[in-house]
Each structure stands twice: as structure tokens, then as C-alpha cells.
Amino acid sequence: MELKRGINLGGYLSQCVHTEEHYDRFIQAEDFQKIFRMGFDHVRLPIDYNVLEEDDGTPKEAGYERVYHVIDWCAANGLNLVLDLHKAYGYDFNDAGNKEKNTLFTSRNLQNRFVELWKNIALHFWGCPNIAFELLNEVVETEHAERWNILIRKTVKTIRQVDPRVTIIYGGIQWNSATTLKYLEQPMDSNIMYTFHFYEPLLFTHQKAHWVAAMDPDAEISYPADRAEYQERSLRLGEQGKTVTDSHCGKMDIHFLESVFADAVRTAQERGVRLYCGEFGVIDKAPLPDTLAWLRDVTALFEQDQIGYALWTYKDMDFGLMEEHYAPIRNDMVRLLTGKQWVSR
Image (cartoon, rainbow, N blue to C red):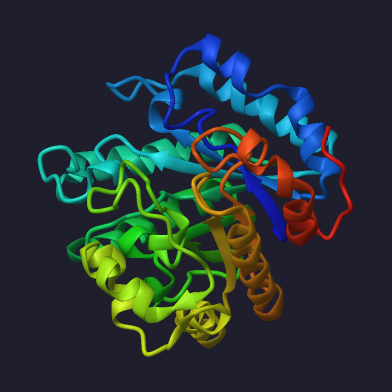
């Protein structure tokens, strides 16, 4: 399966109010027609565990049926689908560091349940030619690196017993950082992809984001810019600002971005594994010309290093391509993302 130019459907079956009314309203068949017309070749579908199972682990057939509809809508428009388990029972990246809530990596029972969920997913969608499986979105804690490798190994073995050919995707720790792929084990077979997420520098792509605790809600910042403009404010972000504070680049520009990519590219080449960026984007509070400049640089590097990608995100979620904030540059964004001349309506 080729995953070259995609877009996320964030907020549809994940990070949302989980009601049938929301599902029916948020995304419909015509959205997939629009995505195809814009030139994308796949969608990444974040999905929370509670779409597919009850709190006691009982499968929800209605949730699986909804995913079947998405698969059909994709197939009707020549689109592939990445099914991304965004939240698992016992693990939510939003609760990073909370040992009471995030117990997946310390509970054998929850790990068995995780593997069983993926077995059920594989059994339901075995034989669908246009689907790939992404095991878990954004494992954060560094202390779970080896436990994550062990869980990956068990899950891949279980999926392969059901479907020997489906593409399986997974990434490293620290929010799927490009710099942590090296901590993953060698892939078990040739139909596995490494993924990373790219929002560097975070101070730019998430400026004024209310959910980033140390982010100034009023301060605007430019891209490209001198590193000095970023240094002090990145220090306040702690771990999430270290990519900037540890950098030796004098400017926040394409050379800085390339230096962050380099570790992921090197790891993928050494291990003979394909590379995929499952999320990247700029918040709807950033200056529009700078958003385009960042997107131009990132997509140029993706093309240079033959990295498939999926923009975060299609609508809403503070990053939605179809929202009013991006209207003045939407056609330019689509051209950079897919190479297609598209006129928004």
C-alpha cells in the first residue's frame, strides 16, 4: 500500500462527543469526494477504543459497521485508509505521566486486552485492500520505551496470524517524535512502516494553544525567524521545547526542520523500513504567510526524503483545513500538499 499524500479526520471518531448524532453530522460521504478532488490519496482515521468496544471489552458491532462505511467511502473515491487507534483503554496521550489513568504499560491484563482489540479489528477488516493499521497514537513516557517494543511485538504477531499482508504502522515515544524511532526494534517483516508526528518548532505550530500548559496564550511568533527569538520561550516549554533549545541551528528555517528529520530518516534507511508522518500542521492562530512558509518547507523535505504524510486535519480541532481561518491560503495549501490546482467552494 502506498501512503503518499493524506489528511486526518480528527474529531470524527476520536477526541469528540461519542454519540451517533455526532458521527452522522461530522463526516459524510461527500467529504471523501472533496478529499479526493483535492488530490489526497488517503485519509488517516483516528479512532478511540470506545467506538469499537464497551468499557468491559465487549465488541461494539455498530462501531465496526461505521468503520466499514468509511472504508467503502474511501474505496469509492480511490482512497486508502489508515486506521489509527488514537486512545486505548488504559492509555490516553492527554494523560501523559498520570500513573493512575495511564496503566496500559503496567497492567498485563490491559496489554492482553489491547492485543485482543487488534485481533478483533484484524478479523473484521481482513481482506480489505485499502486499509492499514496504526497500533497506537503518541506513546509519551520515556520509561515505557521497552514495554512499548514488547507490546508492539505481541500485537504484530497476533495481527499477522489473522492477516499476513496488511500494512502495520507504529511510532516511537515522546509524542511520536522523529528523534525516538531509533528506540524501536527492527521491524518483524517488510510490510511495516515507522511513523512520526511533526510539529516543530512547537512554539510556532502551537502558538497560543490553550492546552499546552506553558504556552503564552497571547504571544505571536514568526517562521522563519532567528533562533534567539525562540530560545527563551522554548525553555519554558520544558521537554516540548528541547528540540529548539538543544539545536545548534542559528535560524528556525528549513535547515532546522531538516536537522530534526535527519534522525528519523537515518533510522529508517538503516533498517530498510518505510517512513510516514501521520500528523503535521499549523494552528489556526498563526500568521497565514508564515503558515504557508512552514508548510512549503516541510512538504519539500517530505518529497526530498520520500516520506508519506497526512495533514492534521480536515476540519475543526484548531487545525482544520476547511475552516474559515485558512480560506485565504487554502488553495495554496492544497497545491503544496498534493500538487493539485484546486479551487475551494
